[in-house]
Amino acid sequence: MSGHSKFANIKHKKEKNDAAKGKIFTVIGREIAVAVKEGGPDPANNSKLRDVIAKAKANNMPNDTIDRGIKKAAGDANSVNYEVITYEGYGPSGVAIIVDALTDNKNRTAANVRSAFTKGDGNVGTPGCVSYMFDKKGQIIIDKEECDMDADELMMAALDAGAEDFAEEEDSYEVLTDPDDFSTVREALESAGIPMAQADITMIPQTWVELTSDEDIKKINRTLDLLDEDDDVQAVYHNWDTDER
Image 1 (cartoon, one colour):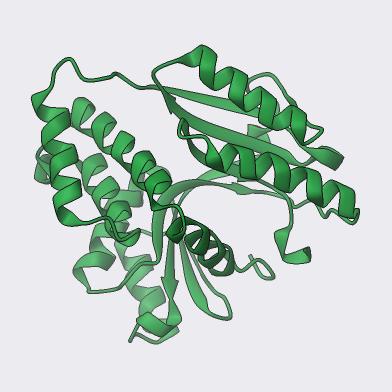
Image 2 (cartoon, rainbow, N blue to C red; image 1 turned 120 degrees about the horizontal axis):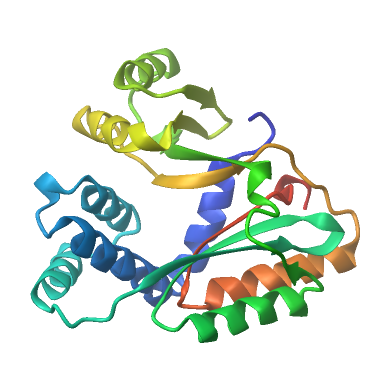
C-alpha cells in the first residue's frame, strides 16, 4: 500500500464535495433508501443502514436530513425503486475503471456512462472485463491528526475487531477488512471512539497504471469528472496511479 496515500485522495474528493454537497447528499440519500427497503428503517436491526449512516456523518450530512431520508423510504411504499448497476471499461492507456450506479432509468444511466467513457477516449466493456484486477474490501481511513491512539494501539484494536490488514501512511492509517466483516470492524472502532475520515466497501486495485502523457491525463480527468457529475453514479474505482500526477 506504500506510496498511495488514500487520505490525500479523500481530502481532494472532500474539497470537491464541499463545493457540491448536493451531489454527495443525493448519492447517500439513495443508499439510505435502498438500505431501508432491504432491511427496514431501524439501524439497530439493519447493519447496512448503520454503515450508510456512518458514511453520511463522515460527509457531514445533518442528522435531520438522515432521519428524513429514513422516514421517507420507510413510509412511502411507492417511492422510487433504484436498481444497482455496475459498468466496467477502459480509459486511456488501458486504465481500468469500474462504475457503480443506482438508477431508476437504466437507459439514461447507460447512455451517460458510455458518453463519459467516449469523451475521455475510453470505452465501456463487458461485465467482468476489469473487475478481476481489483479486490473488494472494506476500507476504513483514519486521519492521524484526529486520532489520539498511537499506531500500535490502533493496529491491535483493528486486528482484534477482525480486520485483515493495517497500514500506516504519512498522514493517515488504513484498515482493510473482508467485506462481510466490515460492519463489525467499523462498529468496534466507532465504539472505541476512533474517528473515521472514510469507511466504505471499496474496490482496491491489485496493480496501478501510470499515465505519462499530459493528453492521457486530461482525458482520464474528463471521464472521471463527467462520472462524478452524474447523480446516478454512486462510486467510481480505477487503477490510475494518481500519486504520479
